[in-house]
Length: 128
Image 1 (cartoon, rainbow, N blue to C red):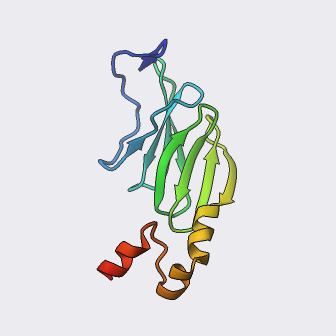
Image 2: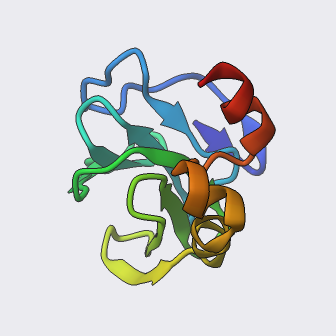
């Protein structure tokens, strides 16, 4: 629980999480965003005590980085598709955009010749 910007006593969120679940470091609209990549879900858990029921949002199949929060939205990056997905604190999808960074990597000479979209193409060549 977060109370006045300080951590308080822990409260159950009411949703089982897999061991690979990752929380955002910043709350969004009074909720903690938790990515559960194993279950392909985004959980928005209330920080009040007693908490409201956590929201569970089903995600498109993907390999996600994040979650990150700006305080207004939750951001997830799908490494497979290169899409950047944003969600509101109530779990509604706000936007989906193609990551320009992935597009740049896919358009690079290394990506075209090796099929590598790694951020470190030299490492890809060494280990391939």
